[in-house]
Length: 88
Image 1 (cartoon, helix red, strand yellow):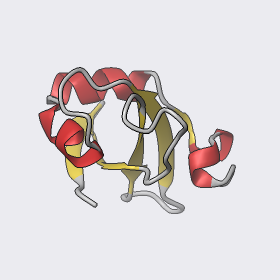
Image 2 (tube, rainbow, N blue to C red):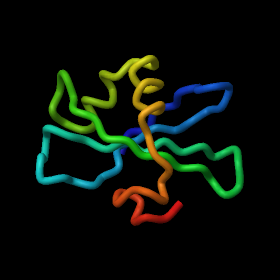
Image 3 (cartoon, one colour):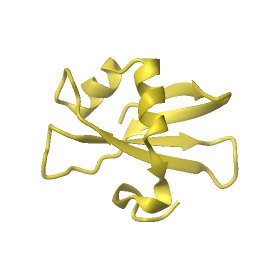
Image 4 (cartoon, rainbow, N blue to C red):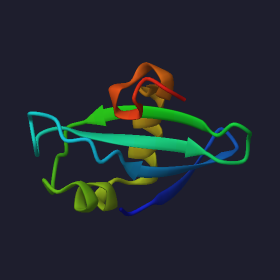
């Protein structure tokens, strides 16, 4: 899976599709934000509806840094999401 990097509030986050498929197969995707410079790694998850491409990898590639920052602001801790199995 593709991984993008974005800087938010002075921290570097890796962004990738979660791999989880919802019943809305191509209408909604999940992104996992991972901060690896801390131990344990910090993980946040968000979902979004793509405006362009309907494939996870293409859709992620189309998102700009501002879009990723906006999605990060809407994200929740990994421990609160089914994409991470309700674990950090």
